[in-house]
Every structure is written in structure tokens, then in C-alpha cells.
Image 1 (spheres, rainbow, N blue to C red):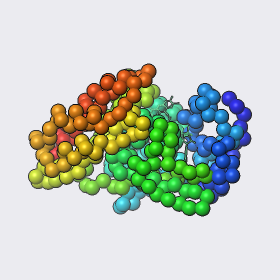
Image 2: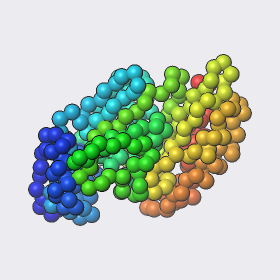
Image 3: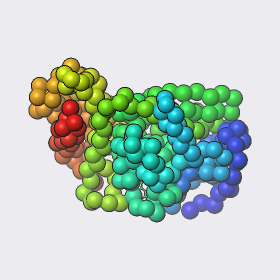
Image 4: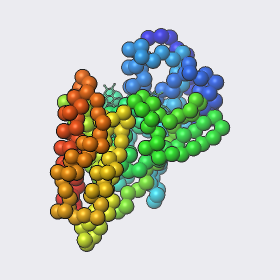
Length: 287
Ligand SMILES: Cc1cc2nc3c(=O)[nH]c(=O)nc-3n(C[C@H](O)[C@H](O)[C@H](O)COP(=O)(O)OP(=O)(O)OC[C@H]3O[C@@H](n4cnc5c(N)ncnc54)[C@H](O)[C@@H]3O)c2cc1C
């Protein structure tokens, strides 16, 4: 690995200034479970590495009536174990728990997972289906945008030079919203998703009609994505009226996977169909 200078800023302002001044020679590091692997392989060779873990206040989860403000440097282990999130955002806890091993989750962060921008990032589908909003700090400004607009392409996110992700806000789902994240991979542990499907459904009572549906897919396109046409097929219908075969077919059409060493594009499409249907059937038992 190429030698580099290591920096430990204490505040967001200091980190942004450092990143702006160091420019393309610098990379931010959180847990390093993606970055250090890439540096070892020689895929990335920064001259400066700037830690976000030394920035105070970036590793906490703050819950209020509106939702959860999750600091970008929050460990995946802390998300998986957070009582408030287990009760209101269980899909995110199980997504975090599905990542790597206990050792990996004790090092790696939610910000690193989404900023690395792997299409298979396990935190992304759940956050997309929950309409998460990201906060980005720059040297002179602060901006927010829907997570959907943060993903630009494989390995590319909507961050300008000198900007860092500071927070992910997840609105509290409407009471009664059901949610699930299903991950498919060849192994049960220590494996990236070949397909990830996150679904949230809200059924109106007492009619049992679907009031709100959100479906997000991982590892089946250049970025994690929402299957918005499929969502429309569910809204206004009761579970018995769901056209499950059409839903499965359309979800696969909304995906645009590639074939790689881990799975072929055709197999991934099949799995999108199977897992989307499975997730909906699982949640509909609560309708
Ligand atoms: C053995 C092993 C198993 C794994 N299994 C899985 C798995 O099952 N599912 C999965 O999704 N991933 C998996 N991963 C990948 C990795 O652990 C996760 O993506 C993790 O969440 C990355 O977080 P990190 O804090 O280590 O990021 P880092 O490696 O520190 O950073 C990743 C990228 O994000 C950037 N970055 C980090 N924080 C910020 C910030 N606040 N603002 C802007 N940019 C930032 C860095 O510059 C870098 O480009 C695995 C990795 C290993 C080594």
C-alpha cells in the first residue's frame, strides 16, 4: 500500500476545510472496511487520509417524534442494537445485522456504507424505502437532499470537493407501517447481497386497502433504486387484489442488473421477482 498522511480533525468544519485544501489527493475514512481493502488492492491510493471518526457528535442516533437523526459515523453494530430503531425501523436493524461479521459491524459505519456507493450496499434499500434524507456539510454551506438523489453511479455519490456526509435522517414511519429487508446471497454470512429487496407497506383500517407502498432494490442496477411502477400496482388494493405475478414481473423489469462473478443478470432478475413477492406476502399477513 502506498504511504499516506493520516489526519484526525475534531470538527466538521475542520474536516471540510482539510478536504477542500487537500483536494483529489485526500480520501475520508470511517471504519476503513471498504477503503482500506481498496487501498490494499491499489484501486485507491490517496496521499492523505482524513478520519471522520474523530469528529465529535457524528456517531450518535437521536430519536424524536419526527424521526431518527443518525450520525454518518454511527457504527452498524450500534444501529443493529438500537432499541428505538428496533421498534420503529426494524428493517434497518436487520439490514445492519446482515453486514459482514461482528468485527466488521464494530468498525464500519452507515455513512461509509452509503458513501462507498456499492450497488449492493445493504443499508441502502431500507433507507431508500424509508425516504431517508441526507445532510451534507461543505466548507461554507450545509445542504440536504433525498437519499435517492445522493446515489449517482457505482462508487459515485453526490458530494462535491470538500463535502462530507454528516447525517442521515429517517422519518418515523406512519403508525402501522410494515417493513422488511430481504437479502439474497450465496452464503448466509459474510457475503454481499446478490439481490436486496426492502419493502414498506401501510394498510388502511378497517378496509385493508394498501395506502402506501415503497419498494427499493439493491445490487440490481448501477445504484440502489426504487421500483416506483411496481409500488403503484399495490396502492388502493387489498392484499387479495394484489396482482402478485404482475408485481413480480414488473419489479424485475424495473431492475437493470449486470452479470458478474457473483450472479448473472437473468438470475438477479428472477431473484428480484421472487424476493419482491416474498416480502409483500410476508408483510401482507399484517394487513
Ligand atoms: C469482510 C467484509 C464483509 C463485508 N460485508 C458486507 C455486507 O454484507 N454488506 C455490505 O453492504 N457491505 C459489506 N462490507 C463492506 C463494508 O463493511 C461496508 O460497506 C461498511 O459499511 C463501510 O463502512 P466504513 O465505515 O468501513 O467505510 P470506509 O471504508 O471508511 O469508507 C467507505 C467510503 O465512504 C467514504 N466515506 C466514509 N464516511 C464518509 C462520510 N461521512 N462522508 C463522505 N464520505 C465518506 C470513504 O471515503 C470511502 O470512499 C464488507 C466488508 C468486509 C471487509
